[in-house]
Image (cartoon, rainbow, N blue to C red; front, side, top):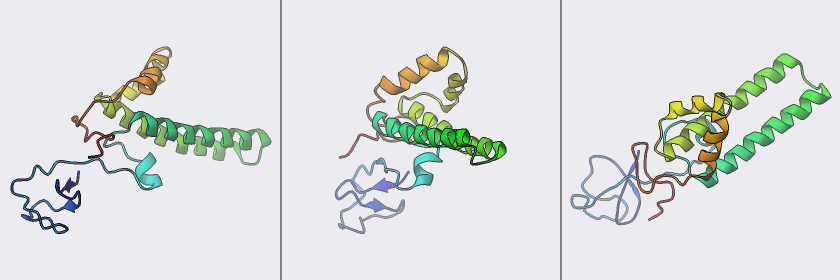
Length: 150
């Protein structure tokens, strides 16, 4: 996690005494970790660290569902070989697992709980829990609060 100046919010190095942007003394600041929003496809779908709040989780799930629908249409029209379609489905499964792990981290649950999505009935309960449960307020063991904007 990056550290940020509590005076101006600029990113700072670990071993500096003054903020390079505003010049504030960092000796008496509580330079807390702040949530850094994802900025690219790799950060959005292919990382398992940090947390993911409900809104971002739902938006990413909708994106993945759109990918599954497109693959299903391509499969029904027989545009690609079945082996290639299977590989493309596998490519979509990996980001799906990563998104679920990050959502579980927001709920202060370990990432291995995603295995519950493979168990019938448990997957329904776990899915509803991830959709509707509010994430942990403030930082938890998996990172800073994604809703903490100050």
